[in-house]
Image 1: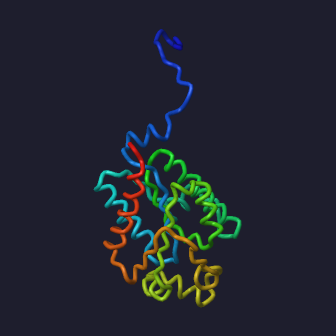
Image 2: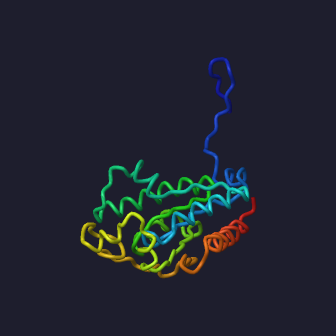
Image 3: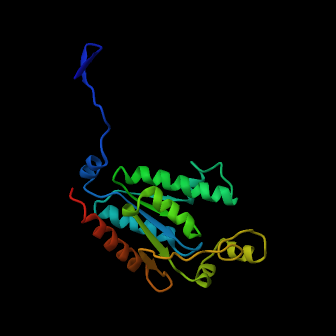
Length: 205
């Protein structure tokens, strides 16, 4: 069927391009790689290095973290319990849009309990969700804390600080655990690349 507009002929399309169309174009399978762990554990550091390595290998990625989420789409949220839940929900919904476009999305958020992470997984879809527990011990995280957040939390100056005055639930069944007090950055990235490539092998593009 055709429609004439301004003396030009335009085809009418009855549906949008599919995820499969976009993945074929990119020659990759969209995934959500969800890094969880304490502040200072190394989540963002690994994500940034991983993005560079995947880019070098010809894979398109997008990082989501507090800097680009809290300053934009979630700039109207505070740190109440309800706002923390909504923060993760929005992140997952945005991530799903990237994943459905075939983009490997790297999300680095404390997301301190299993219920929040399950919500994110349910939104994204279990088959497209990789949970990465950056299991660096809190003692090491505190040593790395150049902003002094842990010290302020221990003095009671910051309320509900995860790991000090608020709990962190260890993931029950993460797809991979990375302890950056034991693994080098290169080793952590290498393990992640291996896992992501194994997921992409299952897709015929």
